[in-house]
Amino acid sequence: MSFGHKLKSEREKKGWSQDELAEKIYVSRQSVSKWENNKNYPSIETIINLSDLFDITIYFTNSNIFSY
Image (cartoon, rainbow, N blue to C red; front, side, top):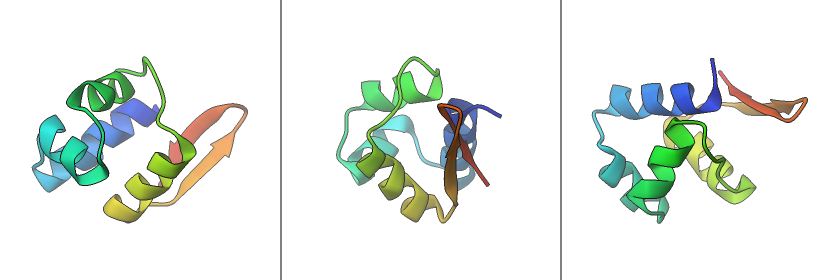
Protein backbone atom coordinates (compact mmCIF):
# COMPACT_ATOMS: atom_id res chain seq x y z
CA MET A 1 0.00 0.00 0.00
CA SER A 2 1.42 3.38 -0.98
CA PHE A 3 1.84 6.22 1.47
CA GLY A 4 -0.89 8.21 -0.28
CA HIS A 5 -3.38 5.33 -0.18
CA LYS A 6 -2.65 4.71 3.51
CA LEU A 7 -3.02 8.41 4.32
CA LYS A 8 -6.37 8.60 2.55
CA SER A 9 -7.54 5.42 4.27
CA GLU A 10 -6.60 6.73 7.73
CA ARG A 11 -8.22 10.11 7.02
CA GLU A 12 -11.43 8.48 5.86
CA LYS A 13 -11.51 6.21 8.94
CA LYS A 14 -11.68 9.39 11.02
CA GLY A 15 -14.40 10.81 8.77
CA TRP A 16 -12.29 13.87 7.94
CA SER A 17 -12.23 15.80 4.71
CA GLN A 18 -8.92 16.83 3.18
CA ASP A 19 -9.62 20.35 4.47
CA GLU A 20 -10.12 19.09 8.02
CA LEU A 21 -6.89 17.10 7.99
CA ALA A 22 -5.02 20.05 6.48
CA GLU A 23 -6.21 22.32 9.29
CA LYS A 24 -5.10 19.84 11.95
CA ILE A 25 -1.53 19.67 10.60
CA TYR A 26 -1.29 23.30 9.38
CA VAL A 27 -0.93 22.66 5.65
CA SER A 28 -3.08 23.40 2.61
CA ARG A 29 -5.75 21.07 1.29
CA GLN A 30 -3.77 20.98 -1.95
CA SER A 31 -0.79 19.49 -0.07
CA VAL A 32 -2.96 16.73 1.37
CA SER A 33 -4.35 16.02 -2.11
CA LYS A 34 -0.84 15.76 -3.61
CA TRP A 35 0.24 13.36 -0.85
CA GLU A 36 -2.83 11.18 -1.26
CA ASN A 37 -2.23 11.02 -5.03
CA ASN A 38 1.49 10.22 -4.54
CA LYS A 39 2.53 13.37 -6.39
CA ASN A 40 4.57 14.63 -3.45
CA TYR A 41 5.55 13.63 0.06
CA PRO A 42 5.27 15.64 3.29
CA SER A 43 8.29 16.80 5.26
CA ILE A 44 9.64 14.50 7.95
CA GLU A 45 8.15 16.81 10.60
CA THR A 46 4.73 16.49 9.00
CA ILE A 47 5.12 12.71 8.70
CA ILE A 48 5.80 12.56 12.43
CA ASN A 49 2.73 14.72 13.10
CA LEU A 50 0.61 12.42 10.92
CA SER A 51 1.97 9.39 12.75
CA ASP A 52 0.98 10.91 16.08
CA LEU A 53 -2.41 12.10 14.81
CA PHE A 54 -3.37 8.68 13.44
CA ASP A 55 -1.50 6.68 16.10
CA ILE A 56 0.40 4.68 13.50
CA THR A 57 4.05 3.72 13.14
CA ILE A 58 5.92 5.05 10.12
CA TYR A 59 9.05 3.44 8.73
CA PHE A 60 11.19 4.11 5.69
CA THR A 61 12.91 1.66 3.36
CA ASN A 62 14.53 2.15 -0.05
CA SER A 63 13.13 5.67 -0.40
CA ASN A 64 9.59 4.45 0.27
CA ILE A 65 7.38 5.37 3.21
CA PHE A 66 5.29 2.67 4.86
CA SER A 67 3.02 2.63 7.86
CA TYR A 68 1.26 0.05 9.97
